[in-house]
Image 1 (cartoon, rainbow, N blue to C red):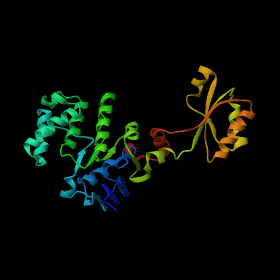
Image 2 (image 1 turned 180 degrees about the vertical axis):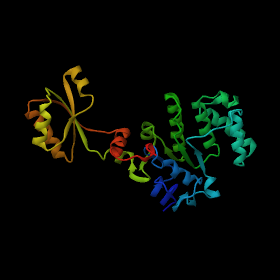
Image 3 (image 1 turned 45 degrees about the horizontal axis):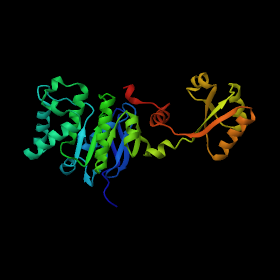
Image 4 (image 1 turned 90 degrees about the vertical axis):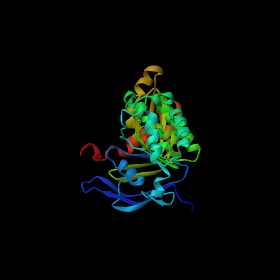
Length: 321
């Protein structure tokens, strides 16, 4: 078996106050875009900091392309954009990147060419000659992304890379990350912008209170809820109780049902379905009740809907400590 780009084995960080990460085991393949999700305070940034070598784990281990996380060899193949970072406001964007290039030991001529190319790719362009004190938050975020990509890393760790960007900026950064993935780079993305994660990532993991709750491909995660929606005419609220008695299913009105009823007199209903026979029974009962059945289909959840359902009712330590 080839080395994974990122592999953790029971990695743990215990701060002694309930915070941290507990026994996390993950495997991210080379060339994969991996989304790391969780509520505030779940432990996401703690795990990323262990992977890039900023903090030592209490127990367990992690390897990057077969090399121990935190080792000099591993640090040479990664780029990292932290969630909170600051650059000296009196420097220009170009000067910040030149400084990072020197830290990386890059050849000056090669570094100069790469800096200009990166400034264009992240959308800064000629404003790289301006001082950072004149940059917006979005511009500073773009500069941070350029810094993370400066050494042409094999693995890129991004902690909320689009948090300060407007919709156009988010689109441009997402397109850039897609191009990186197309070049075979491995992307480890920690983000609350679930629409971006859904569009970019191959697989995801969900962390809460330091523990992994779910781990799998986007497709498998979103298909884990077998939900059907039907659009009917002639609906009255009393039908819901009758359907529950005759089908054994929990049927509810979707949130926008009232708006739909005002437009064309129809209502959308939703039910959790276990098998095809239940779909047929639900449709049969609706017609038997005298309702007009216009549509019936499996509903594809969005990642944000799945996330809310997955963490609903759970304690989230980050908001209370």
